[in-house]
Image (cartoon, rainbow, N blue to C red):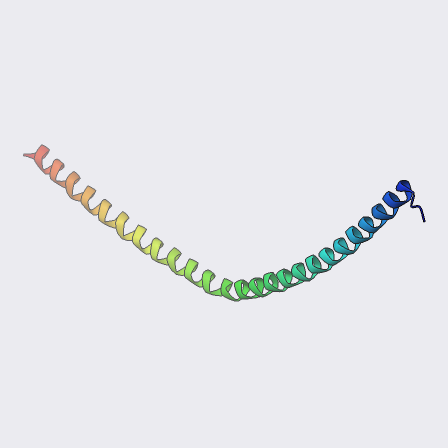
Length: 95
């Protein structure tokens, strides 16, 4: 019973290729399962973020209103000070 070395290498090559194909299939199945879990998590996060959009819009509108009022107050204070300074300068020129 003599085994040809060339035939032995061919058998070893085919066995390693079969093992490689099987491990690749197993790795792909596990990768697909992992990607499905990640997709579910991302969908869940997207739903929760969309629920918070209304709150963020309300906060944004509130800050816009507060900013508008503070700008009006600052403008009126600045114009009042400017009016007082101009009035004082006109009074100094009249004397």
